[in-house]
Image 1 (cartoon, rainbow, N blue to C red):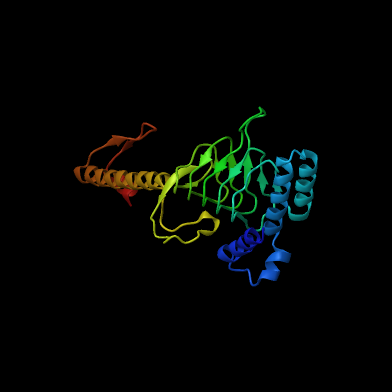
Image 2 (cartoon, rainbow, N blue to C red; image 1 turned 90 degrees about the vertical axis):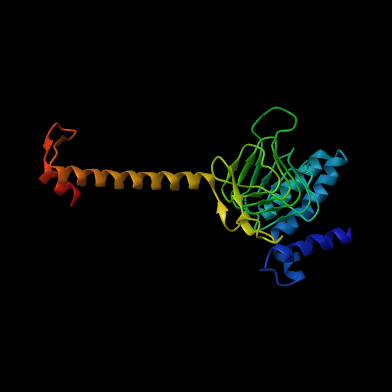
Length: 241
């Protein structure tokens, strides 16, 4: 028990540079308190003391602002930073070394019994405000960007951003370091690349049209605009200018 308690405290220092000393962590960190409450409530749930488990969970929610169903298994060294507004559903599963920021929801999309909440693999980081919905799996070491809405499986080590979330590439330059709020450097977003390519293509078309107008002006040609008016070289010259 004391070994697990030391782990819960040590992980705060590993992932929050604002932590100054052990006494501050024990007395002022709601994520630390929520984990202690949850582990007790989860034990009660396993002992078939369901109402008492729910009551402990409810008390934890009132004190910390973090709502975790006592039926949800949470692995070791899980860290909830700030924590306000975090919701963890009954059939959600969180493996070891995961990190959740405030406003995260591990929610269900069905009213049916059975598995209806997501599973987070080991070492997953979920940014503030992210919603992971349904019985999907987020692979080990994956990162979910702040405010993302994830409704499909995320491969191990991937980074997902956006609404709905899409997988992006990120250069592996983190050297194993913890990525706060799931933000990593040099994001290679295929959607952003496509938009930039469209912008570049549009600019290239504009240059070609400008060259065409100049050539028409030089040749003294005439064309008709969309209103049926004839444009001579002087009109084209004004358009180019």
